[in-house]
Each structure stands twice: as structure tokens, then as C-alpha cells.
Length: 203
Image 1: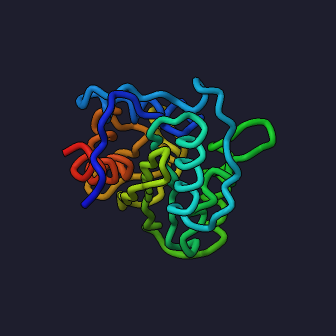
Image 2 (image 1 turned 120 degrees about the vertical axis):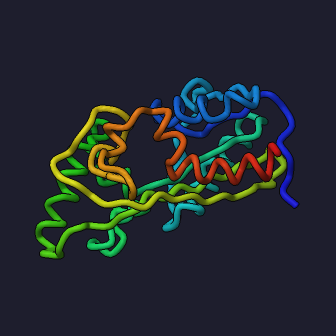
């Protein structure tokens, strides 16, 4: 039995404004106020694990411990089959510049590696999201979601964030970067994981 969430405030352990906005929209129907880590002046913990679930746990437990609030964290990334699942858990690292994250640079690197691989199109890929909901007493619940699709080039669309402009979900002829945010929130990897979390902890 999953532990039920009771309360009206949840800390979302992210400094990513795009992810925060997405989570606010996804949890709004439940009357839950979503507070970002930046608003609470929380540092970003060092992500030392090699899996999405490991890193999500680090972030959720650090935030719950620091604030005394139930904390939700997401660790997500894109896995490209022709690159043996890279960048995967290192998705954000590929965008690091020392002066903030540059996902155009990261997407360009990914495209260049795909061309260098010589592997034929379609370049199948998936976004994965692992959500961890942690309580201050150390208990947590883990939920995983994904969305399958393929990498396209050139980048298309200004909506979304991260790798969205080069990812076209199965069954669509537009990228997540071209998609209406409400539609993306309906089908995304994070929405898939969140549906499972809501059914288990809010249902």
C-alpha cells in the first residue's frame, strides 16, 4: 500500500522553471500548492548516482529534510538507442556550460554523435521520468514514466524545454517543442509517472 499524501503544500525539488510550471499545472486540480526549491533557497544537492531513481531520491530526501515538507523530485532524461541509451542520466550534464545550461548545444552534440554513428533513421529514443515523493520521516514512494518517439533534425518549436525541440513522440508529426503545453502535459513521460503517483498517493 502506498502512503497517501495529506496536506496542501508540496515542495518540488527543482530549480528548473519549466519543470516547476509543468508540475504546478499537473497538480492544480488537487488543490495542492507547489513550491519550487529556488523559492525556499535550497541548494542543488550533488547527484552522485548512476540511475534516475538514485538521483531523484537524493533530491527528494534532501529537500524534505531541509524544509520539513513532503518533497517531490524528478530525475529525467532522454535515451537515444543509436547512442546506447546516452545521454540518459547525464542529459542535463550534456547541456552544462559552466555558465548555465545550453540545450541547443546539447541537442547539437546529440545530432552530431548520431551522424557520426552512421546508424540509419529513424533514431528511436524515449524520455524517462522518475518521480520520488519523500516525507520528512524518510519514507518515499517511487514512480516511473516514459514516452517513446524519435530524434529529428533540425530542431523544431519553441515550446517546452530541454530536448523537446528534437523529440517527436510516436503517433505525432510534431515535436514536443511544437506541441501545445496542455497536450504535452497530457502525454509526457512526467505525466505518465505523475498519473501513477496520483493514483497511488492522491487517489
